[in-house]
Length: 162
Length: 95
Image (cartoon, rainbow over all chains, first blue to last red; front, side, top):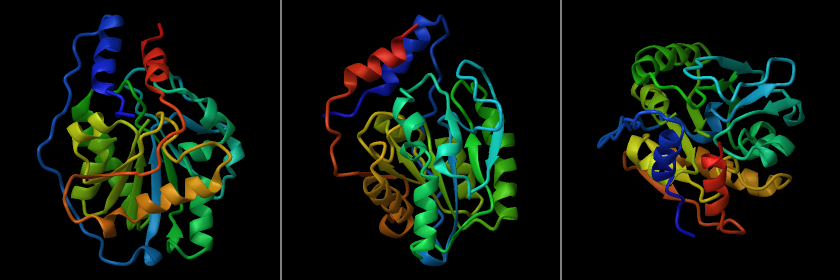
């Protein structure tokens, strides 16, 4: 099947909700930093925006706007210990098996099998939808996360937008 | 999230993004992406399918070594088992 045209659908969604037209970011170029060591030597971290929270903390609010909450996830957490809340996608499958959107169990297997070097001491959940301040993402929230990744000596960062 | 990937990469940490929205990803242009043509939330496939999840995760993690073109979007070859366009439409346009 043809890929879903999300831009068109989201424009419709925002119009339906009475929001002004969304000012999409369109980039022609991108930063590019080749890896300096093989994958089997890399320390890997991961971020999802799919509304994934540890079961001991408040679940994500799927209707909050400009929510800059960012959760640290302990990488030893079993995949069964999460809640999933988001209104931008059908969370039924991810609620049954969080690895559909946040493959924490699989990541541990890859580390155990030596496919990756190790998992960083912290994984991440945040940057949910409904963040309308691009400046705050690019100038504040993302650089703050970079500092945390540097503290954890992360070599490779996987992002799972949802 | 594409914006976050760009900031992290610009700071010197290689990134890989797993996308289920090809048009969204092509606009923001993260450094490198794996596009999985599955419903959003099924980036790594079906629930209870660890082998499939692992295949997709591994392919995503290998992107920095398999892709040398900035902004490349690699298409995951395994198709989803059904057409989900109408389901996505009803999820996003539900009030």
